[in-house]
Amino acid sequence: PPVVIAGLAVGWDAAGAELRHAAEAANAARGLTDRDWYDVRSLDVDLLLWRLREHGDLAAFVDRVIGPLLTHDRTARPPLVPTLETYLRHAGRKAETARALHLNRQTLYDRLARISRLLGSDLEDPQTVLALGVALQARRHVR
Image (cartoon, rainbow, N blue to C red; front, side):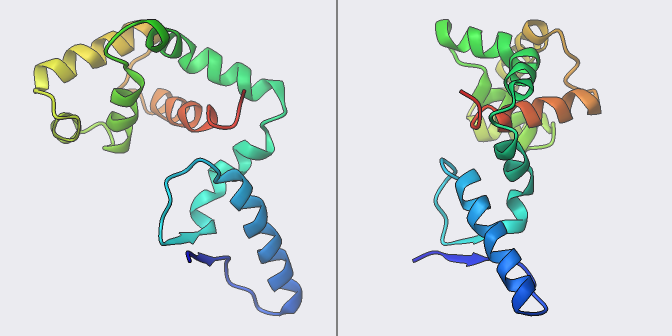
């Protein structure tokens, strides 16, 4: 069975709070890749987004930030969301992204240019990268 690390508790009162936090984080983590162990602290952003899932602003944010990309992927090939996710996971390092996607670099550059055009965004801008990462993560929690 998996091991869950709930956090550091200094007493029984704190242990209860940490366990409640872990239970709530488990709900937020539904759909993530199974692992042998889980550290609840690594789910803080997912937990925040899960708590906001019923708020319409979260869905509007996802639609505003990555909506055109999601629309593209419903009708066109290749899908571009996996390219963007991999690019962000590799902190914008194109050579590593191309290797991870098994693409030559020119193909990756072409896909990134299409993503940038579709979103009207600069993929080199730190604020844009932050918004894209949050929106990609938030889409798991919105319907």
